[in-house]
Length: 267
Image (cartoon, rainbow, N blue to C red; front, top):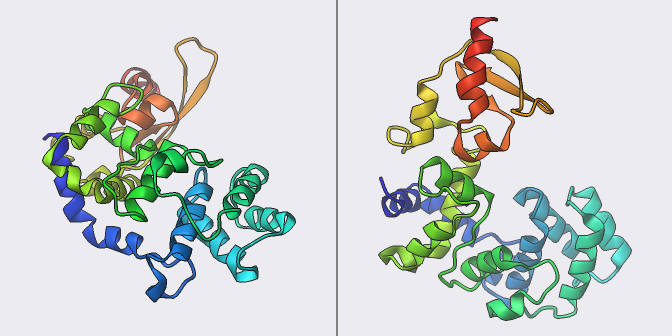
């Protein structure tokens, strides 16, 4: 198993979902997909989605334009973002007000995009991939988690993995691949992974390690190495899940490997 074969598997597995994401209408008629108005709404949604769900972000964008096109009242924008569950609504309201000064045009280069408030490298990459059909790959928490669990990256970021993708034959499909990682991270390789439905379970280091550990269902409390923090390990259907960051990234941690067996013996 290598990053290229994994990428090809994900592209095939989520081909239909990727196409649906590319054709999201954001409250517009399907005939307007690809128009300046559509690109603007997609960028607005990309700015709003950080820290919340895609459903909330799309709902906020559609509601704002249902009320007024384009939205112009800061108090109304703030209320809509708050009511739809957008994180940091005050800050995001300011970001949208600046963006709306360009309505309905959107930047077409990374440099121009990243000058906008609320747009960093990841948001720019996703917009360029899905709105402008450019071969850009957005690195987010899903990519970092998946590459660590599969054993491709031991770094705090997946920069080395992404560099390999950009120089491989798969580089022509980076935009779609970026979305495929999101789909896989949302549905299977989640914070609490569903290894039973994973196409890589037989060779994934984290899944193999998890199979070695089967415990009685329950909630077990463990201490951090310095004794200052308590973590809850939840065991469901024999598989443990720890609330620490190590488990989130790798699917296994010292609490599960070392402390949980002792707790189970004394249970």
